[in-house]
Length: 118
Image 1 (tube, rainbow, N blue to C red):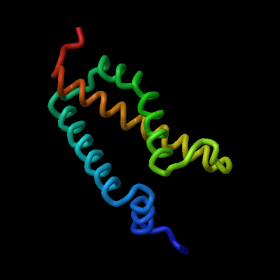
Image 2 (cartoon, rainbow, N blue to C red; image 1 turned 60 degrees about the vertical axis):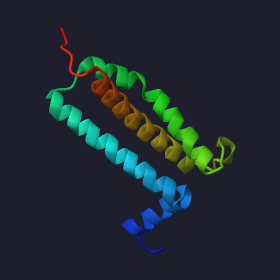
Image 3 (cartoon, one colour; image 1 turned 30 degrees about the vertical axis):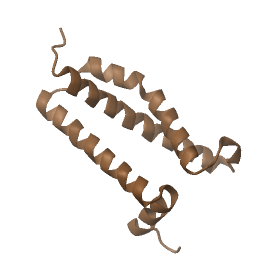
């Protein structure tokens, strides 16, 4: 592999997760993103109360993302080979935390609707 292309990265993710699971995750992420944009446009502002609860849920999403990747790859923390593996797990934790926070914010907004801050 002499150069990193989008097709190469796509093939690697499909190999890691399997085609079905990978594309299902892409579709779910796209739906959550569309719902997030819808909520922001509908409410015309971010609710700080909902945002705070979403931030407090971030560790749950990060831990779930790391667990999910370790489960899918049939790996474990004992298989970590060096600093790059630790950085990769931190990146997975961060992505899972942010994604889960967005999901929690969207879920609150769709269930509760727009509420006044006062």
